[in-house]
Length: 185
Length: 139
Image: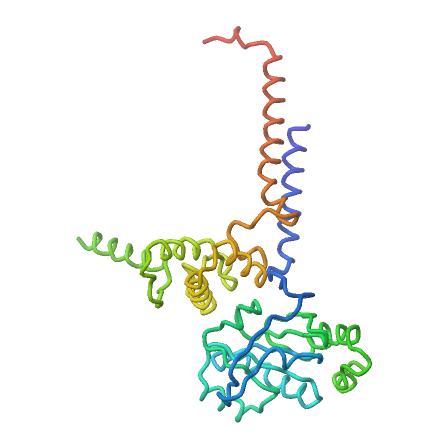
């Protein structure tokens, strides 16, 4: 009897693990969540004389969005970023591995949701932020802590599900004047 | 002949996929270049998880190779580079994650399984040796 039960039990245990594995998210969570946002200082993508740096983020709840004109999915999320920017959400861009002319044209054509975008042709700032590709969006709290990282396009659904609850939790009384306009009441 | 040619060309196809094309200028110092070559094999591409950044053609792998080369050139130690990358991408970016509470199961697991297997093996041996030998069987 035991000679049938034992192999079946082993099979069942392995099967259970594999079945669970099918439903697990293989995305490695960012070790930066809960840590201070990495510092960076980059020239502005549209104005090489101007600088975009991590000090611009200080004291405000903001989004940091990794993008590039080579990134098809960035085009998909762009309209929603413009919508958030109109509602008053400060969005900073990290323009990765891109071309200044193409990036300026993109912003002129599709609208510019960014307070400013840093130009990062070698992806050094992106590595500092642990970004793998684009689009990626980080939520940074007013104390400079990374609250969340989202890989893949930011949609209204993802925004309501993942970002709004964090905003409700972490926004101080005057941190997020945009909260009512973006679905956070 | 045709078979030999196709076999040889297949070899070239397979060989070219082993390493990604590295456009950076190599170090003059062979020690630094050697450190670079071995380090990029230890670092997992965060985008295509089953390749090291030495093998991967992903843009992020090229950026990481460039960054590793730059850090080595600046005199950063291998351990410091690993710590930096692990702090940004998680311990899983290292093909050999360092020992920590989160990786105890990973490093200790094989020994646990070896121990369990050993106990099972020993018990089987013990029960078998308690049985009489089959000396009566016809040869």
